[in-house]
Image 1 (cartoon, one colour):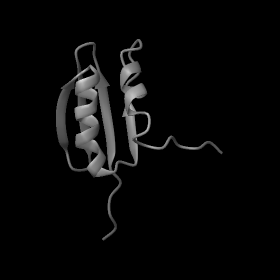
Image 2 (image 1 turned 90 degrees about the vertical axis):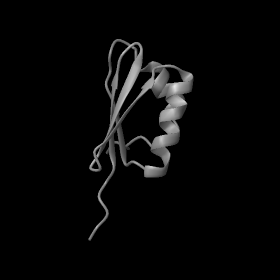
Image 3 (image 1 turned 120 degrees about the vertical axis):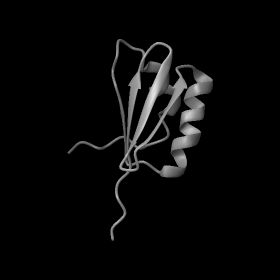
Image 4 (image 1 turned 90 degrees about the horizontal axis):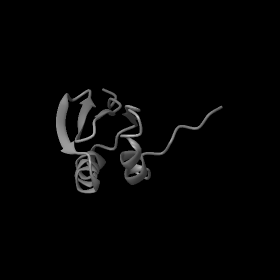
Length: 78
């Protein structure tokens, strides 16, 4: 049996990030600040996700993308 790809979806709001992991169905929320984002990274890194999709919501996602930038390599075009 081949291992399944791990994909993460992050829904952003001014106060929190709601995070869902597929295919295992894990769901958790963290505060949308430096400490909460680092907590999310610590929880997600062991899963080695192939994709992290972050909802673009009026720049509320900016801190998340800045802090988590090194977590997953961006896909290359081509």
